[in-house]
Image (cartoon, rainbow, N blue to C red; front, side, top):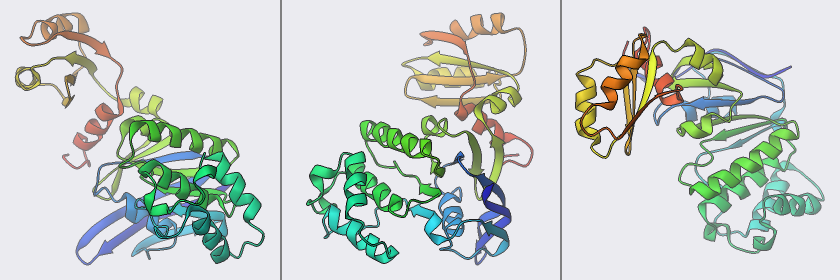
Length: 295
């Protein structure tokens, strides 16, 4: 059963197109990711799906009532001058939930916040604020969670802990739609929509993306990244992606052995090997494909 179904969904703010012709279905029990950089249209999409922003085009069908969908925005939205417990009690009152004390206690225990129930929410760390926001979203026992970049600005350890919590929630049958700019988090999704400048470039899972990506991907390590990137550009790769000392280059299909030897011999290259395509490689290809942002 589809909990959400959007067809040609669009949102404009005057001449600015925030989201253009978005098609999306979300079924019970799915874990789906909207993947893209800042300005891709992810937050506007979430606001439309949550009923906070009126679409300017297309159609949106929700098969769950307002208590069946919980939305956690990108920025912390609970009252900083209330304690952890007071915030949850206040939210329970807004939802009309009676005798919510036991559920609040169970939720706080599930995210290791029970010992912080009397701390002001504004004094929590970034990771703890996200856990509290998740508790608030789960008060109504929703069938669908909408999470807009839930770990942005959170340290790596807290990010991992938060995703462990989300996997536990998903394991209880709750469907989750999340957005993230982090490619490592994107791989948690069963299905992904790659977004850029308000449009979905590609939709699928990681195996299907990799299967459809042409060419050979090589992973190089170099402390002289700029020098190596310049040398690689002269070899006319299809895509180049670099982060830290890691460089990834995709070349047209060919015999990989001679090309690998040539790459390994470039000045400054400490290590070179054939690699499996990453989401960065796939995203770059989607951008350069016909109809993509640079197509």
